[in-house]
Length: 498
Image 1 (cartoon, helix red, strand yellow):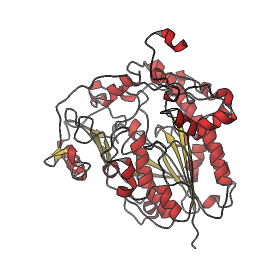
Image 2 (cartoon, helix red, strand yellow):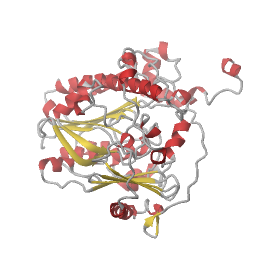
Image 3 (cartoon, helix red, strand yellow):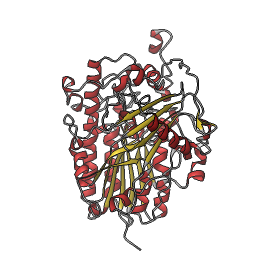
């Protein structure tokens, strides 16, 4: 049997592309991410083609774009997730298991249902929220706290408070050794040190730095907010052309975050990343203790970013760089030169091909051949399409990247944006009215790529469907501990005491 390398995927949630010291952020402390940068290749133009948790994760596990998976938001599916493998092919873990790999998955999966069989030999969940008491009982991290550290089991929100506290700086309610990130690293190390004679395919998915921004002590005081930069903002007509941004700001109580508050939040967000970086270091140490460390492929990435106040916005679900662009590091010391940079367009869908190619059975599906590009045997992609929201409705938006250009279409009002990222990396100047030929060319490419069953509702006679602008009714999102019957704020304050 031909030798096969190990493959390890490490994923964070909501980590911006610009949060790695070795790639240019002079304020953040990330020695282990820097270690991965030195170990391999940094793809500096990598995107989440549907920048929100659930759809992004399905692109990773299927190697298919949202136009094939049919998942365009956390709540809308063009087809049931239960039929996903029948439409897209086996999930990556199942595929790797069939190729002779021992497979394990640890951390946040955000599938539907939450305990969907994703094909791992060992699958240990640590989801953010619990829908009911049974889910909290079955969640591997919550069970760890309940059984091994019951002194903390009284805490409703083990990763920090949400709802109106979503973007309020916090400290973890758990000590650094017991957080969900530390638990995931410990379980990963156990799996990495196991050996049954097969190569391993591992997937480690951290919950952070997704809000709430609640690093444990002492990472909560690692960064001085006065040294943090202010958010990058422009004209509101540009920043809020996509109604999803102000709608989400209101939903999570972030509609009036001041610049000083934003700096405090960024300091806590950086603290969470530095803490995860330390957990990552334990995983890398375990890899390096193995005799086959040089023949272990490691891919580090995030499901999407976070506006973090840029463009007068918070959260993701839009196509500004801060939300849609992600860190994307690939290392394989036995095959790839360390310290390499690639500016070619990449996306989460490409990860399926990296794993299966390393395993000796290349299956790119909708992805590009990034390993082939690095070897000089495959051409880079010329364009990259991203989609969010149900096609054919006012929630639908898309992005097309080509060269230095980024085109954004917003169905609600038929708005268009065009940015030249080479000259305007902060995306402040909308050139849609000044570059009609570029605009028309990119629009035509997007229209052709949408001409598939799940994308067709976004078209009208082959052209992008433009809808009359409709403001969305504002509402708050309530995220309490449903597993313990907490569903909202009380009608009368004293009700919480009864």
